[in-house]
Image 1 (spheres, protein in one colour):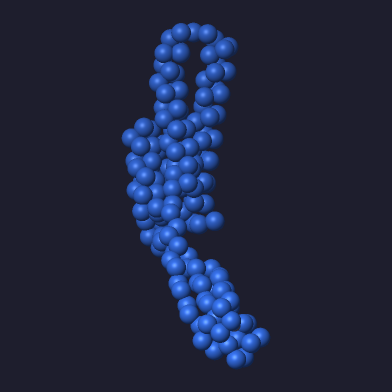
Image 2: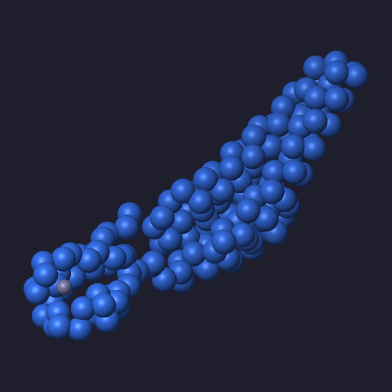
Length: 160
Ligand SMILES: [Zn+2]
C-alpha cells in the first residue's frame, strides 16, 4: 500500500473513532435525561461530529479511488483544513496528519504507463504479444535460430 494511503487510513480511523464515541455518549446521555436544553447545546456537537465523520470518510474514498495523486494531495490538505476550522485546536493532529499525507501524495510519482509489445517474426509470421516485457522474443529465436528478422510494435497503454 502506498504511504499516503496508509497515513490517510490511520488518520481517518483515529478521526472517526473519537467523534463516534462522542455521538454514542450524546445519544446515551440524551436518552437518560431527555432534557431539551442539553439537546440544544449538544446538537452543535453532533453537527460537528457529522462534519468530522464526513471529512474522514471523504479522505479515505479520495485516497483510495482517485488515481490522480496531485488531486488527492490537494483534497487531503483541504480535509485537514476543514477539520481545523471545525474543531480548532482539537483538529491540529488531524490537520498535521492530513497535511503530511497530502504532501506525500503530491510528491508521488505517476505510475508509468504500461507498454504492450507486439513482436512479429518476419520469417514464420508468428506474433508474440506481451505487456511490460520486451525480451520474450528471445525464446522464439532460441527455438528457431534461423528466424532473425522481427518487426516490433510498441503500444503505450494509458492508465487512468
Ligand atoms: Zn519465427
